[in-house]
Image (cartoon, rainbow over all chains, first blue to last red; front, side, top):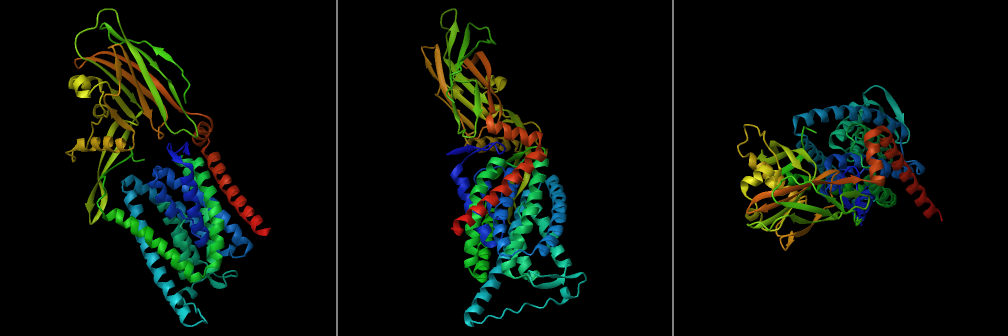
Amino acid sequence: MQIYLPIAEVSVNIFLLLGLGGIVGVLSGMFGVGGGFLMTPLLFFIGIPPAVAVATEANQIVASSFSGVLAHFRRKTVDFKMGTVLLIGGLTGAAVGVVIFNYLKAQGQVDLLVKLCYVVFLGVIGSLMFVESLNALRKSRKNATVTTTRRQRGWMQALPFKTRFRTSGLYISVLPPLVVGLFVGILSAIMGVGGGFIMVPAMIYLLGMPTKVVVGTSLFQIIFVTGFTTLLHATTNYTVDMALAVLLLVGGVIGAQIGTQIGTRLRAEQLRILLAMMVLAVCFKLALDLLIEPSELYSLGAAGGH
Amino acid sequence: MRILALILCMIPLFASGEEIVLGMSQDEVAITATFDGSNILVFGAIKRESAIPEGELGVIVTIAGPSEPVAVHRKERRFGIWVNTDTVEVDAAPSFYAIATSAPLDRILKDTEDLRHQISIERAIRSVGAPMTITDANAFSDAVIRIRKSQDLYKRSENSVLVDQETLFRTSVDMPANLTEGDYYTRIFLTRDGQVTSELETTIDVKKVGLERFLYNLSRQQPFIYGLLSLAIAILAGWLASSFFRMIRGT
């Protein structure tokens, strides 16, 4: 059954959209990532214009993240204090990112830069996470009593404005989370994603937060960053397609619920290894696109640097 | 989609003894939520006061969507990766272009006539201002045609206009699902030995209706409210799904 999307001005199969939303929703709930880094390329692939795909995807992430975060609220695995600090950095970063994005658009190479960003960040984060969680998994197999001693972050302990994040069991300065939020905000605005796939590893490895809290907290702040992005796109570029968003989010919210359930049954190391593999797969695919000669060398775009 | 709104337009542009009398199955295409393409039947007759003139008769039907400038990018390998290097702006390319003819186009239409009336797909695209650095500007307009043909937006179907007794003609044009809104400029040409002897123009109005219309207008006229509404739907859907799943598990 086909549906004509009013803003994207293309006709797409309803079940394809529901299915895509569902699959990405499951991943979103499992890993606490918005799923934008998967969904956005998939939408390009089925013929949605890139500008509409990026904007609508932000709207859909709001839904799946909200659905996911409610489950974490009840389980009390959301660190509100940490989330708010990250969010302050994130919104500032998003605003800066939009400025950078518009500058690059004027230079005419924004597509390439977005893709390179994807390849580099997905590649680095994916590999680091993969190696780390593989080691952790091996260690935990060797001796049943796992003693996860967090690395001492000497220089981080020396920073001022220390505060206690009770839910995360941390007593650290607010500066590192602020900087992480800012950095992820910039990247998410440029790459058109919620930034969960960067945020989650940053919280685990840089801030040393426990994995169980990370997912909920990441979702919590993603809601606001993507909500902000949606409004920005809707008012400046008119590229949010409500019909597309509704179809994606119907699949997405259901998927997110299922994903959250699966996530609680898996061990943290397994969860991270799966996320790492997925990140690497997307990275590999994008890298191939850049390296292999495309069958069509020409592409069409809207004229006038739009 | 099958409302037989029969319209008869008689706007002869050429006084040559032969005139086109046109009928169409519909003069507007309504894009609804379930729109998945449309089929337009174009039929008509050739009206003449005198005997049938000499020369081979040709009938050509073209339907063109709204023209817009298009930026065409070409990729090249730089530092091992494929990046967009050259860009040519094609000044006007129709979003949709279908051409149906009663015989192979080059047999019933002379090149000079094609140039004058811009009938073939290649002529319907206008490109003037390629940068000086680009020597093969034609490759870029060819790319527009190639890409849009593969998306079913440009099509040329020869021998698809049926002519009966040199008087009646009919053809049907498939409009794909990925249509954009606008006035679709429809032309019918009558040729004798490759010369255009009569021409008739009309428009097909392609527009969104109902919910599609409402959402589109809202997004353009009240973008902030539209954005808030999108967010509200997202939050509501997220909450509903969450409570629904909790209810299932609760029982």
